[in-house]
Image (cartoon, rainbow, N blue to C red):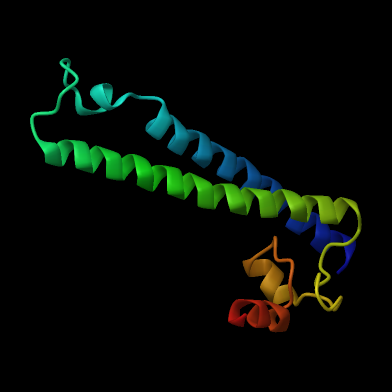
Length: 123
């Protein structure tokens, strides 16, 4: 991979990292920034309907799970930036072969070539 292509991918990764951080902050703020009482808008602390409480709990759990998934992608993105810095980017961590450019365009933080990724998923 030439220097220009590497700089392009680095820029994409930096933008992705910033976007992920904003999304995670927003999701966590929605889920953890308000109490159950505030979220249902009831001053007494009790919901009129049990379904309201269930829906609120589901939404909080969903947002936290989404933030967790985004956090994993953020971690992979930061690791890819580290690999660029260490000049290890674009090589499969299992077999050491080059990761295909087409794959890196779709998943710029990829750590494995297609073949090794398929094998890991089958395990």
